[in-house]
Length: 120
Image (tube, rainbow, N blue to C red; front, side, top):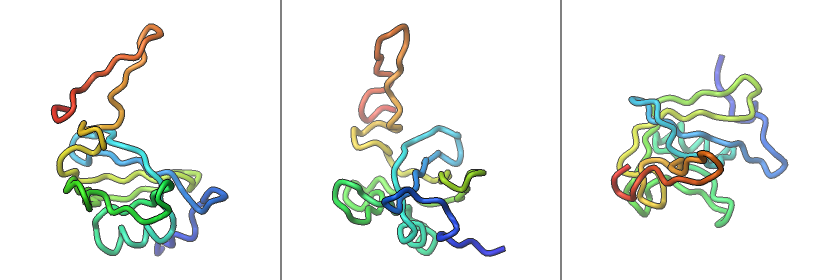
């Protein structure tokens, strides 16, 4: 059965959430948005390309920072309304220079930063 990005369930703006996960460690790196064209570009080039809601333009991860995400595997969830991208991440995934965007822990009613920039 061939994959057709049009078969996915997009929101009213034509977007679908995509979670990037390190393919080797399983670490969740980030969440961003994709549309049918960014999915097609990602599958064609192997470089993960998202849709930037703020710029209203395609965003090839790492095009300015050099922190490229190479697609290893794309998975579709059971409801077809969310994607899991297993990636090979070069450098930090987060724009704060942390490995993951999920570095803030909520514990006992307080927020705790769990990773320093450039070190995880």
